[in-house]
Amino acid sequence: MRENILYVVIPCYNEEEVLPETARQLKEKMTSLMERGLIARDSRIVFVNDGSKDRTWPIIRELYEQDPLYAGVNLTRNRGHQNALLAGLMTVKDDCDITISIDADLQDDLDAMDEMLEKYHNGCDIVYGVRSKRETDTFFKRFTAQSFYKLMKLLGADTIYNHADYRLMSKAALEGLSQFKEVNLFLRGIVPMIGYDTDVVTYERHERLAGESKYPLKKMLGLAFEGITSLSVKPIRFITFLGFFIMAVSIIVAIYSLVQYFMGSTTQGWTSIVLSIWGVGGLLLFSLGVVGEYIGKIYLETKERPRFLIREYLNRNHDNDR
Image (tube, rainbow, N blue to C red; front, top):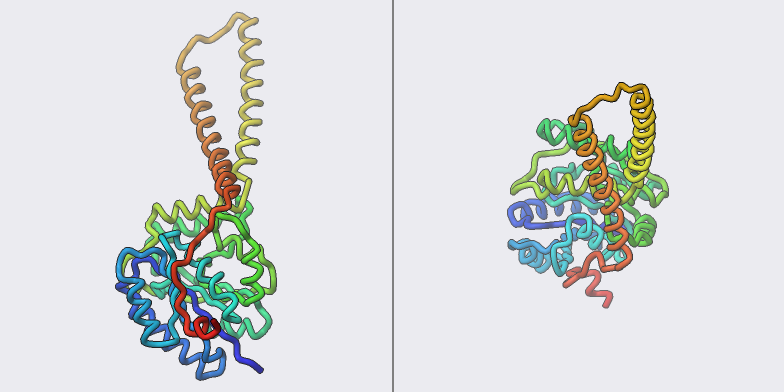
């Protein structure tokens, strides 16, 4: 029986501080998996350089030149974490049998790979890495992250609770992912749409090895908004229902005002009028903003711009095939 070729895909943006240690730990894990016969000797560690401004790509090239275990994908410019991860997965899907995606900071537990591979051999095409707890997070980050997952579920987006982008995908699952062509990318919501047999592996997350997080609050909020508007139309439906509600209230208030007028007991006062104007005006602007966000996404989708462009792909297996 042929051993499966595993490619571990790691998006990287300005990771020069952590990359050498990340490469060392991943090599130890891959070597262990090879020695136990769980993966083939042709397996690779693939670093995806997402337009880094530091020495991330030169370090990746050095690793590739020193050891054939390492491979690299260099994007032409920074496209964001989700596009960089997709670029790596789509680039290697024809060279491997399985992929495992993981962040460069190695906060995700590498030992969870063993259980992922076990579940793959038991018939699962997608295995999600799910955090068992968030004790390493600050209270604010823990609260916002948990609120995000609950909000996504409330709005109808099918995501895995406490799962980021640490997951195993088979070749069949990668082929399924390649059929999704949207530009507005949120892989945590798209992957569950693929189907196939899935399972989860729980683990405890570690502290970041070095450097700073590439997901500050601004990017986290942007990712959350991207996910909600990319996967669900419930915000627009909510605006519709809210509009009907306000219209119903307006009709009731109009009837009440007419009755009061004909009874000769009209009440004079500008406060309620001004507050109503500002309230309705703010609601209209908010509603236009939400609808405009969806229209903007439609605009981007219709242009069909490439989600990523690859400058260079370094892989000894790939080079030998050409």
